[in-house]
Length: 89
Image (tube, rainbow, N blue to C red; front, side, top):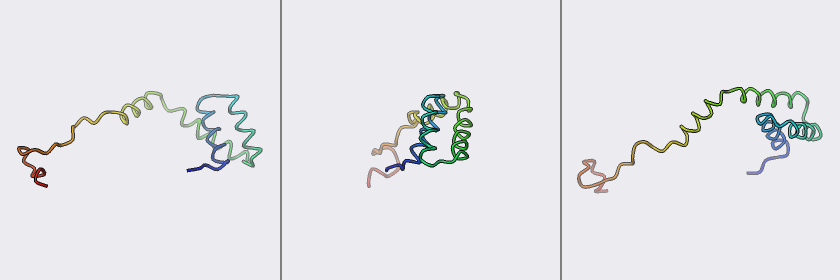
């Protein structure tokens, strides 16, 4: 998949806001205006990124742990004694 220049700039603005990287934000906004992004579009993406940034870090930690957690239940292994009949398939 290849992103167009507009999508790349929007992602750069969003990432700079999320990381509080002011120099990168200044550069990305300048690139955005040079590429034809409107002031309203830039302000909207900054607002969205700031809203996301406000979520507590504990939520991020919890979600990361949940997504990366090892499965608790082992996959069923068929045997002659399991009673499911799957070992005959």
